[in-house]
Amino acid sequence: MDLGFLQVPALAIYLLLMEMASGRSVGKRVLVLVVYDENDWQRRGLPLRKAFRRQVIKFLGTFPVVLTGAWFAFQTWGSFPRPAPSNAWLEFVPALVAIGLSLVWPVWIGITIASGNEPIHDRVAGTTVRTRETHE
Image (tube, rainbow, N blue to C red; front, side):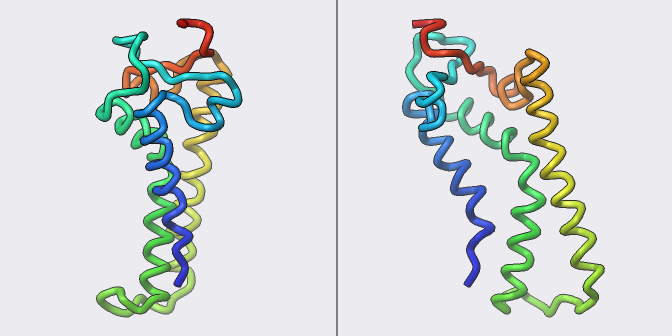
């Protein structure tokens, strides 16, 4: 049984819990970065609503790939309600579109950060990422 499509949701849950607890994942600790609530710079960690919103928007681009992976996994397991058509192009085209969307999303976020702006997930959630010594 292939559970590979669960990797992205597992990563999102890990980041959600770490940002709620301390505002820092293991990677942010290494880079000495902290996610701050824009309305409360002294708060340690993020409120659930802001952390959840931040992760949903951050991983929005991966949802098509996760859904496509789940579709193929259910077909393989044989637990999907009805047999899928055996036309290979019907399966290939949605998978290709999903992969394309999942590649555009992080590139857009990267360009936004490189240009000095807050990425979409921080703007929507009302958070910001700064070095630890900036506000402590």
